[in-house]
View 1 (cartoon, rainbow, N blue to C red):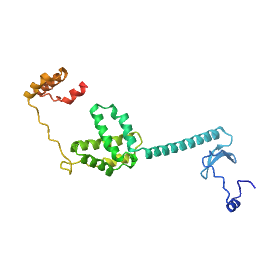
View 2: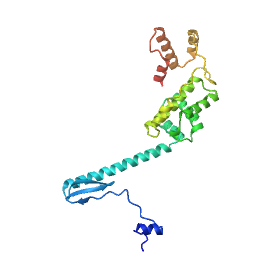
View 3: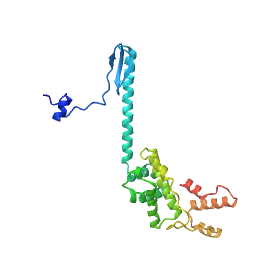
View 4: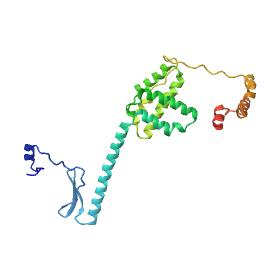
Length: 247
């Protein structure tokens, strides 16, 4: 008696293993009377007259479409597996390397601090499991530290959402994660545990004039241009524009 028993009844009685059915095999072209056909998923697909060029072309197209559909299903499965495997720490690290490190020094430093807060609490969490409640917990940690004012905390939360938005573009984070994070309301003035820095007061012209001799030539020229624009009420007289152009 053979090892693989083809008799299902005997196999069931002797508990011998049955050869599994091949479901990934490409169906062959068969003949049904004068026509060529293939049997696929319990259906008969007619291709044309047996032996005709049209039948051969139709069969080749059938095989190509079948292989393409199986490949796309495999790609979607791999993409889903990759989404489920990406951790918050990996997402934040990739964002910093590919995006934040190319920003100006100030913004890069802010993202460093944001990533530190984020990964300290949820670095080992899967990125797609990040939720609004977890985002609020990260914000609570920022509030407990007491080093950031309320407005800066809100900006840091926006930067965290930006990291996850970048993950959506890279197809490692599901869009619904970012949509839910954007529903988190910003901290309002007077929120428990937060503080606001006092507004900056303008410096008098006499203090500026006394300070000019101690400035470097470049900075002194920028200050003089800034105040000359202000004297004529120039609408674009913003120090940040000159500093960025200077950098």
